[in-house]
Length: 133
Length: 125
Image (cartoon, each protein chain N blue to C red):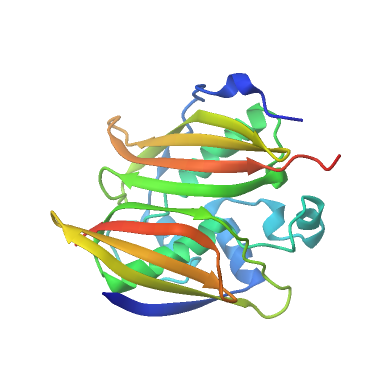
């Protein structure tokens, strides 16, 4: 079933606050073939929040996660993410196209800290693979 | 300027660990049958896992540099076999250095095929 076109422009509620800790950053880095000493989290770390926001969006729209393949991902930073940050992600659906039976969903998530300041904007293109007919 | 190419081996166990660390439990990264049901050639690595490995290469080339932006397309899936693993290669080239910003263009391949489209990092070194 195609995703509802009226989604474009809709902003979903912010994700619950995520506290960035040394332990969480260390786990993420260890799981991505690195070793973490101290300092900023690696550049793809905010995907943890962006993924939370995406999951909430997919659940709200009754879209199956297993039909989603990642098409594109970008991170644009205002400042590095560091342990001690308390972050939330707010996802907006920016575009929706149908190509060859698949929905191509454009999203942008703003990652803000507990003062409300923007830390990072992550944009993602999600490919929703239609059921074989 | 060309940077030293880095090779990473991806196994199914790596995907399980990445799923735990990232929260991305999409079964196409674990389960052959689910992957096949949506037309994929097998269990595939999380695009974000490959992207994180590419970020790791960048940080090894520029230790401590602040990343201002990082992006790519996921153009071809990285199929990870049930036994053993699959290698990806991350090559990089400095495209420009101006106003304190260094732009690095990456080439990420698996079995000689590009898996990321236009991966690019901008750093404040």
